[in-house]
Amino acid sequence: MADNYDVIIIGSGPGGYIAAIRSAQLGFKTAIVEREHLAGICSNWGCIPTKALLRSAEIFHYAEHAKSYGLKLEGTITPDLRGIVDRSRGIAQRMNNGVGFLMKKNKVDVIWGEAKITKPGEIVVGKSSKKPMEPQGPIPKGTKGEGTYTAKHIVIATGARPRALPGIEPDGKLIWTYFEAMVPQEMPKSLLVMGSGAIGIEFASFYRTMGVDVTVVEIMPQIMPVEDTEISTWAKKQLEKQGMKILLETKVTKVEKGANSVTATIEGKDGKTQTITADRMISAVGVQCNTENLGLETIGVKVDRGAVVIDEFCRTNVPGIYAIGDVAGPPMLAHKAEHEAVICMEKIAGLHVHPMDKLKIPGCTYCSPQVASVGLTEAKAKEQGKDIRVGRFQFVANGKAVALGEDQGLVKTIFDKKTGQLLGAHMVGAEVTELIQGFVVAMNLETTEEELMHTIFPHPTLSETMKESVLDAYGRVLNA
Ligand SMILES: Cc1cc2nc3c(=O)[nH]c(=O)nc-3n(C[C@H](O)[C@H](O)[C@H](O)COP(=O)(O)OP(=O)(O)OC[C@H]3O[C@@H](n4cnc5c(N)ncnc54)[C@H](O)[C@@H]3O)c2cc1C
Image (tube, rainbow, N blue to C red):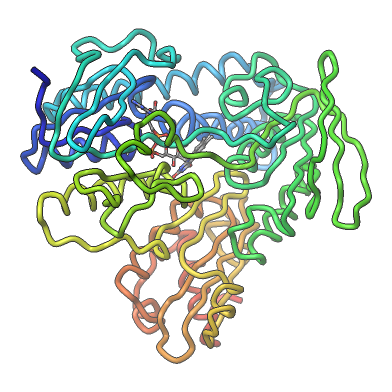
């Protein structure tokens, strides 16, 4: 007899494990299936371990610049790569353990293995095609195993994996994906990063701060192509000041591997080619949804451009089957996955649910300086025919930024000229990934310029740049 549940979730990343917790909270008998690592890519190989690496880089940078803060650090400060990587892996392990604890606490059964949907309401869990990966170690105790399981509702939360360009496939040795870039055995002297989305730029920033000669090749006319052009241009200048080389409107057409280096042929917009030789290369050209071997074709779940097609409540075209997170398409972000998880479960429970508004999903890149945004870029707002007002404020005129020694940054706000509605906010500078949430709340409440101007921001904080940017949009800036 198959074990029977109300809800089974396939995949335990931020989408899957949050869905499992909310499902249990709503009184459903819940199980989650995982084939490789509890907590998914985000905690094991994505959001969290990269931030741990970047934190080490940041501390290293401050130590190197201690003198400018009036501090004498004697001797040379050298990064200990083993120590940096071990710290990052230890933090990933802690997150992973945390999800195991949360599953127990919420009485969610963990089923270890690879799930396939055999028909609506039924999955078969087979042996995993993956080894339980470090830092997961051995399969966690108390998990169920291979077999047939049934559930009224099946949620697909299988995430995504690195995308590879034909002919430039990562080999894990010379051409890395984010997996290898996260755990370097030794520091390369030079590094070529193909792709300047958040993942590419974060690794480029980490390695550059560590003293590596980094070249970024981006096919689009700006780095972090989804960001506002002005913010992207600002960030590019700062990264270049740190010694990063950035080539725009350029593509890698061929890579030849040597004994301990790669030579990439790159082609500019004008068709001219040149070669770059580097010790290692990171392929950061996006991710591809994990939709294979799930039985989707057999049961007729629609997939479009690689992603499972869902409606605004995460329902697929097959009743009783849902999809959330990366597998359901962009933006490929952990907080989008988590939010979809809650929407999905609450809709199943029959609660009144607001559908996902993709325009209000913030995006953050944790390079140095950080970049964060929400809503429409200036170009998108204009493309949509909106009559807009734009405000700008630079960190250089903010006391806290100057005191921190972080006076390079810009906050840009975009308002609807007629209604005063905040349409978008874009930031580059120290800690902007923490600040952006203020604008996300504002947008969610459909705030206008009036309300923002009436809001008191504490002094001295970097957040004052947000208010000044709003004031600037209305010709009332105070500190510039
Ligand atoms: C280097 C890097 C940095 C990132 N940084 C950020 C960041 O700062 N902020 C942010 O928001 N996002 C970031 N992301 C993206 C973020 O990690 C993903 O958006 C997020 O993990 C998606 O969550 P998910 O639950 O959809 O899938 P995942 O986290 O990918 O989890 C899916 C899980 O499903 C399991 N699985 C797959 N198929 C099966 C099967 N058949 N049976 C059983 N289990 C299965 C997998 O093993 C995996 O554990 C980063 C990603 C990377 C790679």
